[in-house]
Image (cartoon, rainbow over all chains, first blue to last red; front, top):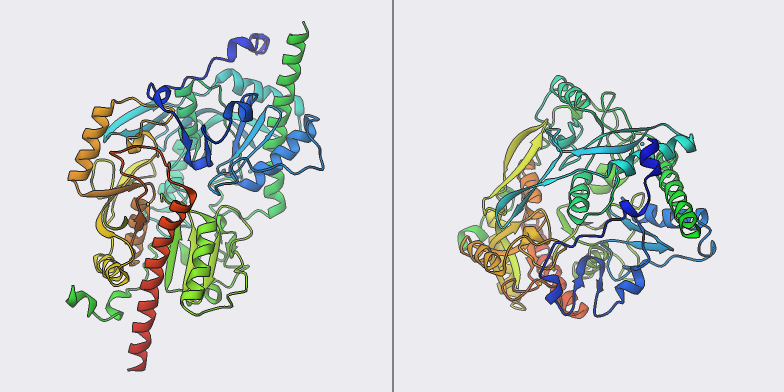
Length: 276
Length: 276
């Protein structure tokens, strides 16, 4: 991994590609889901210095992460409260400290998995979208060097097991993830095991429900992106989330520790570059 | 509509169909997303009397609805606060008053549309799901008599315009809904208009992102279900949600008024039946 680690930072910070020629003609752009708009908010002033966007499952967890990041990076007052930057809506919550933006979405909790490829339920790295009624297939490649760096960080931390592998992204939590504990189940235990075995053979390390869209959108935007999850249970052992709240919190914390460590390392490396 | 309105209530309250033979073998069923479980919560005691489940977009809106329902139905103390029944998680919020359960998910705000059929972006009433890597196509029929009753209620209320029509359910808010104001746009204004015109010709009155899964799941469960939305803007006029917060709130309130009126009417009809 030496050549990748030694790669200069600039070469990886490609400009964001906003692939929509119609945006330039708009006088006001209302970001409805965030309750933000170009006419009412100075978005460059609010977000212009953001270098790291961390998207996670729950509002509480993303607030907890920004507090953790503030302490880790020695930024902000540990006693102060972080305001929700999209308080005008309860669809999302958004917190910021220095160059770190923490946005809520959702995530399955439990070994840390750094995603190599996000694959669909047929184990194919593609995201199918319907645009104007027609199928559009989009690439779900993630930034390999960023994933390698995160794996390297996990080795340096040496606090928990971390692996790199494929993440399978499904459309639903129950049947889509071969669970037998939902309201509907149209398959047998044997068929379930065969499917999970096939997933394993295709390099799938964990299953969740967001990574494929996230990967496709970041890819289209030219954004360097990584997906880091933590597995909760061995799906060949069961379907139910029966771990205690404390165990789940400890698992979720691992992602914060890894991502916090990576951000700190990057900022240090940039500071050294500026200094030189 | 007379014959449908005169239909006795019993014939419509078919038993819920939980189509999973494996559930009976489970000692404890953990409803992870709600932070509820059969071992820790007496679910029949908590939810046994529920007759109306109202699922909506935002936590605040669903709390506001339970307060509205409590006042409308003369149930509960108007001064009291309604606890969130899934306070152990922030994925969902759930409030209950008498037989009414109000659960948060998400919804687009704006004329009240009572859904006849929920259709996909090719205007077909089907929900495609991947189970064990194979395509499963599910029926998205909604209960027609319930939709007719809701339309009748809107006429009795006579407070706002309400129509019955098809609801198109998409996978994303921007390109999937032929919007040109997202980060990506791969089509022209002309192509967009042609697509929206085709949708209109197929009976589509509004566009949102949940109804097709909701319809398919209720259908599979044998649950009588309806979808009621309120349109925010004429998509041939624009893409952006530029109405004021007050206007949006007034629109959202229309759904509460209609659904509250329906529930009240049903409970009165049942009371008359019990009395006779």
